[in-house]
Image (cartoon, rainbow, N blue to C red; front, side, top):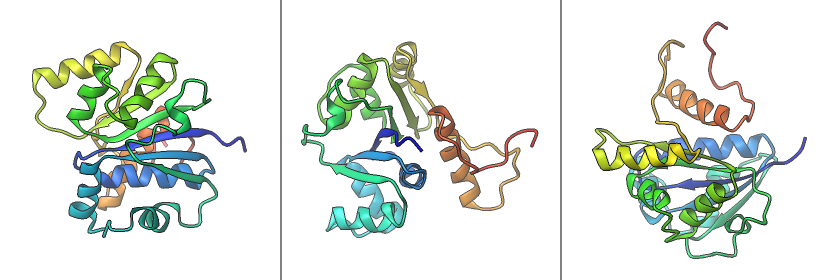
Length: 198
């Protein structure tokens, strides 16, 4: 199998489990993942998942990498040595999951204020796949305009909205649907949910 190279950003929006599961599935499929997590993202790990985040790299290896065949590379938000921060690196694309409205704004305005925003900017300027998974409600006009701006630039906007036609029985079923739709957006095969008509 040809190893693909994916950048993944996890921000402080609620729904950290979506980002965790996306990374796990990419690693399970044998891909290379360049991971960036905002400070607010680390806080959500503590608040929503009850993870102790004192030793961050050890925690990521334990919780995300497990026995998967892919390669996990973690980058701090000020470490611009990350290969995906350059357009010359052949990154297949980026997913920001979950994506806070602050990060949406930073990407939409080309701020490149940290590594995550810079990598997203590279995806846009190089015409590569960029998927953002916002998890916010309700949405105000500024947030909608920022997402519309990104959509017009070719960014895939994939809100964390699970479908119910598969008759979910557990929380994991709901999570799998959103994670599966995210992987669909980047053409990574999976069997996380039953598709309509199957």
